[in-house]
Length: 319
Image 1 (cartoon, rainbow, N blue to C red):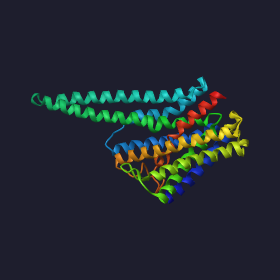
Image 2 (cartoon, one colour; image 1 turned 60 degrees about the vertical axis):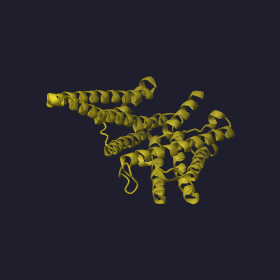
Image 3 (tube, helix red, strand yellow; image 1 turned 120 degrees about the vertical axis):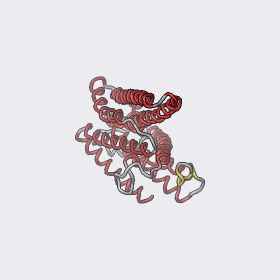
Image 4 (cartoon, rainbow, N blue to C red; image 1 turned 90 degrees about the vertical axis):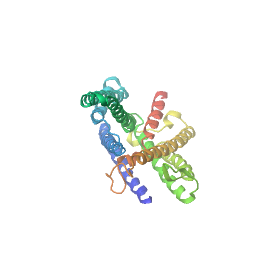
């Protein structure tokens, strides 16, 4: 476990450096990293659901995955509202899934009626119903993947394009990193009562408390880098103090966000563990040998993205 955390930290350092470098050249270049991560996440979720007996409607997911970023950019450039583009991609993807589900279900029903004799009509209808329930599960799985991870992760692009873009990226990454790290070390040291043994047997209440403390540490580290030392001033990025005009007030905001972020990071981790347990898999993928797939690295980060987006939206509106 320790080796996994250290490797994850190294990978995230690379991501930090890559995003920082690309954003200095052209903000949209950093989006490419997000597009790649998002695509891999959807692919891994489809495979995970398949192992659990759900056949996600791939045409719908393919359209939404390909269309979401161009639509975000198009609506941002024309209306200044990239969120509309994300909503359109997910909504159209869902419509495609419903249409495909309806057509397949109707085709199965007609075929079943034609192939059954008069004496087996009742059995035929039962089979149709059973297939319909199975297909409904597929539709629901597709809708779920359209939201998690595709819809939720799309908030990365809104964060990246905002005035507080780099600040938001650091918060979205550093808070979960510190949450995971502290949760592990505190849990191993103090052990104690299990948090959710049916979902993640190794997680403890002490580790969860340590994780929240880690979230505060991560948020305060961002506070120091952006507001106290002005480390990223030369990168045309700003912290919250420019808005509040008070380091104390900004520190309080960062601290509160660290608590919220710590809780959400742990919920994201537990949610991913629940999905994997239901699917009967250890990891979502194998892109990182010995450390799972992209979704295994995003599990505690993914819920942070919309939270950071909301924070930035509020700050931008006030400013």
